[in-house]
Image: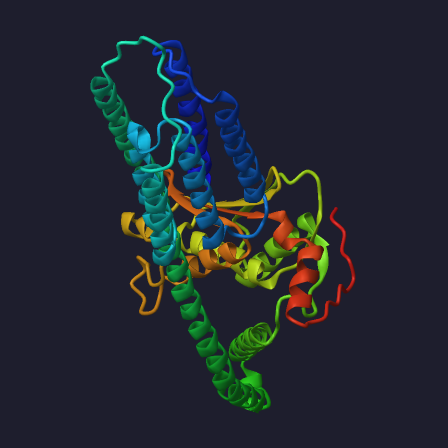
Length: 431
């Protein structure tokens, strides 16, 4: 529709220029009132088309066909008023047919061909002859050849310009469809991973419970209780088993919990503080430099998926760098930006090139390389994006997502769509 609007403006300008040239240069009398009405009709049609584009619904094939047919009718009217089929600009019908072949469905293209052909045939017998000036010695054949040359150049230029634009539109559409297919494949991969993770969590429950019972029995053995070193190691093992059971429970709860169920409403500052504190406690790490530059605090939902995403990035940075890891949170317009940097060897060229694809890892572990894959897909689901780069002294991962995606109102809408209920819980406030 945008291409048709632009072409129609060109048609209005070209017709005005042609009318002025015929009057001022060749002194040909033309029915100006009637031809002006056709120009006004094209302008009104363009205004209505622009207003139509502002509507949220997509432009349908029937609307494109109607626009093309109205353009054909307007061209027929102008040709009727200026010599009919003897007018060399009669071949502008071909431009309408060409646009129809690209923009509308096959049956609609044939409708444009039929109407254009009928208009051409009608103009061979029904038209207003050109009003040549009295006593003029115009070489009509030379004038007709000049008009045909002008029409050919105009047709050729417009076809090249608009066909290139339409082809570019089609390429962009194909690229978007390819991206959607890739996203669908990746989301299917995530679903399979989630099913396997849930199954593994269920399976691990039994052996962990068995280990817990065995360790508890060992703790009552006099020989072990008499050895302080062994007793301490036994207590450490019990703590690790409890931690494993907590992780398994968390996986099962997250797998069966839709976004919005038992979610807490908090603030950006409180959420980030909790994430960093939890990561420090679980990893027993103190080498994180936490820089919170988020000035105006806002209410958000404590999304567990986003928390795990930040954990994944921090884990990768801590594994790659024994030195300090830096997490910087800031606000860029209406987006939350979280940057994690380290002083490790950086990403390989293959990982940067295939960022967000599964199993892209330099650690050499079977099934590795899923961390960034999950990070990219979760951020994309929330309407954000992930960038990764090397700095020469390490690597930097930047996560950006709109705050609107984390707002309680967005959560309520998501919950209503999924027939879930929201429990806002106790609202924690930032410092």
